[in-house]
Image 1 (cartoon, rainbow, N blue to C red):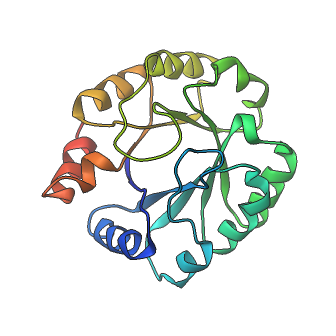
Image 2: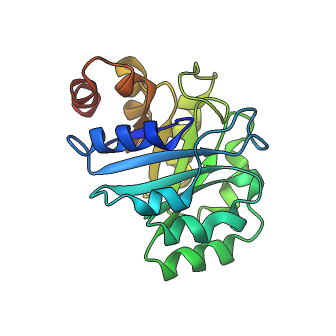
Image 3: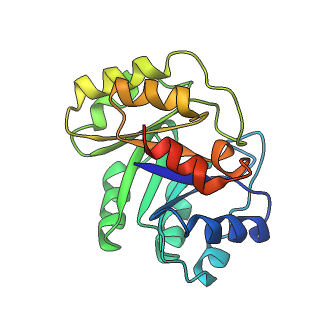
Length: 207
């Protein structure tokens, strides 16, 4: 499965890309960067998301300090899945309970600064795991070393988990990710920088 990601400076661009993705995807991944947990900030208005009548399922990647403080507003805006970085999580049980009230899921994320060992205590409760191959922040970065090994290690620890990999997912890296055990590929720059976003999506989806 491939999910296009939205990492934009403004709502106008985000809306345009979301509407474009409706032509070829059933899900959309929205990157929310606060400029505090990350060095840069992105469009991050849950209120504006709520105004969209999109048919897409929405997952929201909370690259923010204190994700639990904003989790409810994104769930109320229609998010079906929240992605939270392990080092910023304070109340796993509370976060999972909140998501359950909205019939949503929570995915635990490891960025390049976090080892697989950081996720192991939570794999019993979190059935969805996210590997970010780049540092949290803007789209179009190069992947950091070791991400494929992380996927393999997580697959050994949690054989039935859904593993999502995010960052520099071009066809070459997509093959590596799938071979390592990833279920879902997140791609923004490769898809939306292409003159044919639908074709780029379908190329990744065929791997």
